Length: 116
Ligand SMILES: [Zn+2]
Ligand SMILES: [Zn+2]
Image (tube, rainbow, N blue to C red; front, top):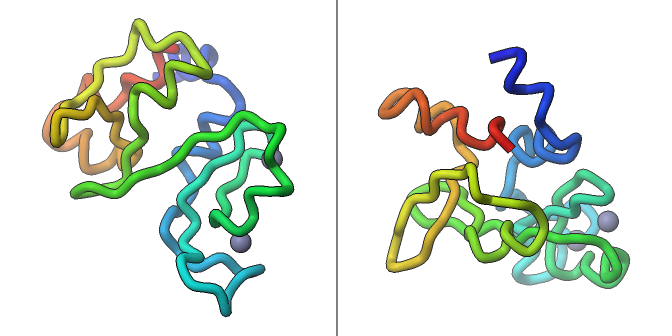
């Protein structure tokens, strides 16, 4: 486990630790203020209203199916995904962010992101 984590990009830890779909503190009074975007540069999540201040940064959109996921298409634009084992939901290839739920059903796939 520890040696695999050495390969991990710095932002990945933030991505995995982040809680998405909470209301944005800056935009509490706006509609659609769920934090569903993650900035790899700032290593933080924010809502669509916060986008303008990150427009030049590499971003990942987080989607919610049965749990929080990122689409493989989105991640592929940013990093080499050849070692990632995606899941298919609604004909889209996705990667689960909730590792604890994954670890229970399949231990290997729970650690897949650390193989980057
Ligand atoms: Zn940013
Ligand atoms: Zn916001």
